[in-house]
Length: 187
Figure 1 (cartoon, one colour):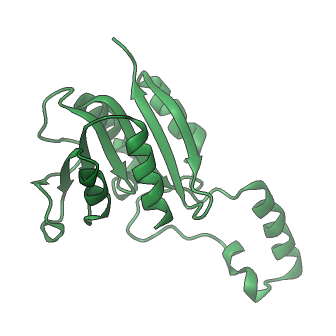
Figure 2 (cartoon, helix red, strand yellow; figure 1 turned 30 degrees about the vertical axis):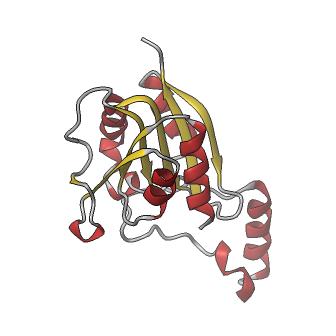
């Protein structure tokens, strides 16, 4: 629920009135935004989620600059990393102003690195299961912090596409979700 709060707060911070919610999966974010008189189009690949439009990245059925803000939370890791750049380009093509994404992040924070070292030295205290070798979610092709994909790699890709990173941070209550608030550069 904490991550839904971050999604909502970031969307509202854009001051946009039209949103494309890619990978909508459920009604929570759309309901919160429509209650604030925002126009939201839900797009998903799964018909069972009752999206407004069926579709999948990296090719979406929208005109250039047709939606003020494009939201894409916990979706891109379900696609091969090799098409990440194409997906971000497509989000940027559709967005008139803002792009907000979240990605799974397995990178250990500084305190966690120290705890992991202690974990390795003490030989597996059971309550520290979190510091076992990390396995990627079987539904994900990639995650930040695994196999050379770091937040700096993501930020360099975005910078190379001439998209401004307004902010990026990890959810303090669920640090597995890393949020990126992006804005298109003025042409």
